[in-house]
Image 1: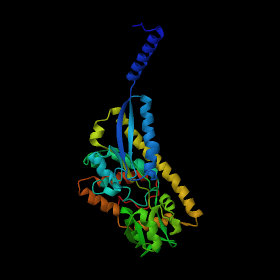
Image 2: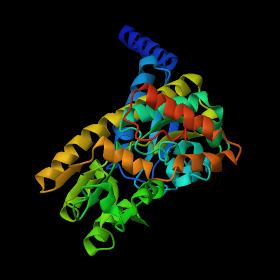
Image 3: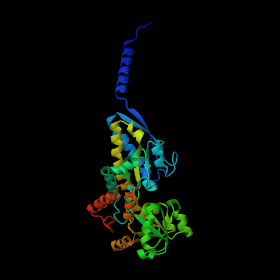
Length: 358
């Protein structure tokens, strides 16, 4: 056998050196299935896909120890809307964008922004406040722990609940006897003005307004413009009923416990950034949506602070009702309510009613 030439030996040695170097710095790949029943056209999924995932990837790449292979279970490919909570609890999803308002029986403390209407339209502040409360009040995160999940952060896609109507509503008193479609707790906002609430969902509002099932719809600006409601409800009533946090980024407990600490740190840190980034997007979209309404012949009627206070004053104290019901479950709802309202007062928000002190 011929001896290897000097060039071949040098190439072989170089290859071994490169392979050894590559092995020394090899990244560990972690498979992560994240679920949402909604498509990437939904703002909360869009920003998760366009900000959360690449930001996590970038932070991990800087340390070159771990990388994530993402399986994006969006658009109903793994779960339908409302199925995210059970999917993460069972481990079908490693992570998920959970919707707490759909599960108030299991996550009542995370409903705090829904039961305090007419308090603030600052979605950044609401997101930050709810996330901070979850850090400071153990019972909030324990709601997720009890269902085999780890809470990472809150987010919201509603900067301000408003109302779109087929006819002009110049004053809250004009809602007397009017049928309003809406979803969840926000339908209760109309009890104080004598309106008739009809439980529905966003996808059906247009048809219900068009066919006369309802005269008005409880909605936010981005959705109103996106679903072209100006075609069937040309009056946009800017009542500023308030911003809410509708989502929580969570992880399956067993999955989370098996992650390296540096990966946990990045996933949790980026969840906080995701909430603020989603708020950025929603606020920008809201301003553009109102202009879209006007451009397409819609009329914007903006209520004064006095009208907002009148509306809030005539409502039953839904926050106190919520607090008493939740306290009966052994949860510190009154402490959560006071801490939340204190944070809004400290930020000098245009609070129409101090829900915690009545």
